[in-house]
Length: 450
Image 1 (cartoon, one colour):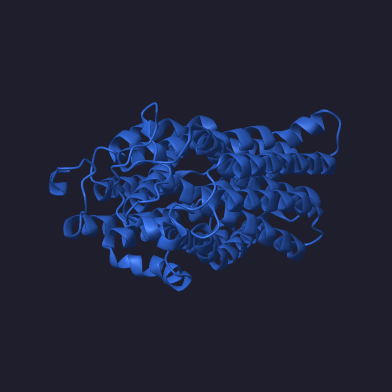
Image 2 (cartoon, one colour):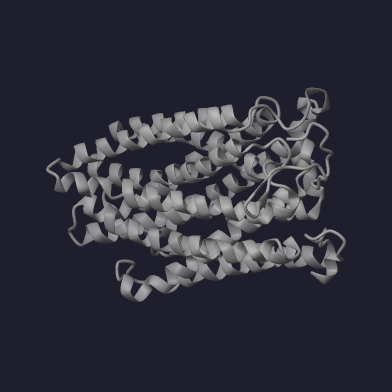
């Protein structure tokens, strides 16, 4: 990026333009295309953990279905504890080492966790491998989020986030549809359930290695400012928290608390819900996972189709205003899942999961765009680190309680919990819009008019 970039988010320096996207100075076409692939692979491959966990619990450990919600929630809880400890460190390292190297390392570590995962002989051992996964996940997604804020010009930020979101969604669909269906394909080809699971995990590891190579060699090297312009480490580490004095950054952190974790919770409990319902009907684990993944594919496909509409909204209106819309859609989308009894009856319940996908992606894009607009350039890695930490804490809370609610009340209960959380953030966004609306997207306009 520009060596003379100020702490303001707007820059008059020229950058190349690719289609409708204006890139920040110093970002090449190769960097952009590497980002596109990283957006596709990073989010897609991290969601494979939902398929992997369902496979291991049923095929390798043979855990009763009435215990799997609690165990899955606890595994997500451990993942987020690890990320809470990691995100701030990764954010500071991003401003000192570089995005591409850290993203590549994160993908490689995530891949190794997938190799070890099916060899777990107990839930405790599985938890250790889940911690390794969390280290890779936190490093890779933290860098992807930082790159997403680095690469666009401000006028294209909403469209850029949405464009990246399209490839996030495509990656999720590809991984869940292809890798999620691989065990059933291998079983039908003559392999037993255990070998089918092992070969699926090995294939996923290979995908992670390839993604690491793309990130290492393709993304822009270095950091966004000159060494002498970087802040001291102590200031970088604390600047993310101090930035919350800006009410719009505080709102972004609050949105991250629920929105950044929506995809993980959606993937964890939707696939688990469908798979356990199928297993309770006497279906083999590989086929049950295949049936369970369809719920997630429907929601993710709807999210993908909705992204262009959100892109137009986010770059046209005040971004705090769009946060009200985004969090309201998310609240309704998750709350409506409470009306679903049988997730395998797709002919009647698919509209609920379509609305769920729309709400989930709206909250994610709204939060990402707002933090990208408000994060100061010199402390961007640290601010994004706190943003990601807020998301990790949100996942921690919702997964722990969601897992218990899944087993003790109903599989739909975790979704209702998240819907309530999104509703509170929507109210917070309304208050911020009234008291501190911030800049309009288009320069020279009154933010109150947007």
